Length: 250
Ligand code: PGA
Image 1 (spheres, rainbow, N blue to C red):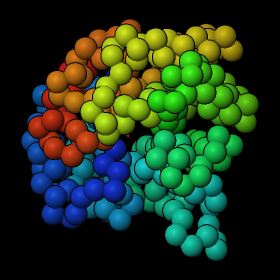
Image 2: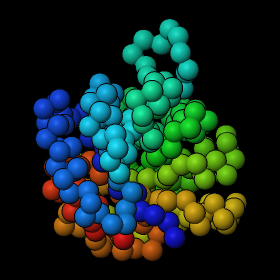
Image 3: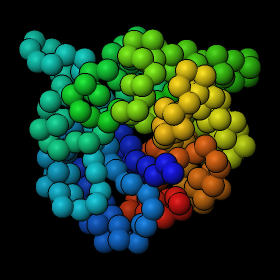
């Protein structure tokens, strides 16, 4: 049985005040979440606040990105050990916004995955096609290329140490969710691709769905056989909405 993981991706949102309100709300309701593992991925500058407010609760936390370097003259970068220093369990790598807006290619994302897992963080590897790629009928090709970059660098068993998030770019922040069938089809494809290399890794690896998942559509997405949780952007910014998604899992 794969335990579903519901992770909030706050992106570049929040303030010390709003995060306090959000985390107070999550802490008040987390006992009602019976099955899912729950985490929030915060902007770096708020990780200290998140750590002090979530320590001792069942809610884990993580970063949204990391450097491939360990330390030194890399202005503006944050290393894996810095994230660990603030108690992070997870880190998102290869989010489509990093790929498209900050030029992160498959090779760089694979290195970030490797650095994160070697350090003992759980990387959440984001993959997914753009609308143009879906319309061209190359969703599988794109997702396979993104995933194989990690497998080629690290070996398929490296996926034992991480989580995959299938996030069709056309569904992110657009309010246009993939249908449960569309999402399931992509998730099953990802699992099959991994199973061709190692059936036990494929069986165990958690594959989250991301892209406009919300309190209203979470249950039917999470009911699909190969959807093991969600990576939630917009709907993770309100405690009530995020908790509703967490409760819909499992
Ligand atoms: P969204 O974002 O839920 O706002 O679509 C998901 C993500 O980008 O991880």
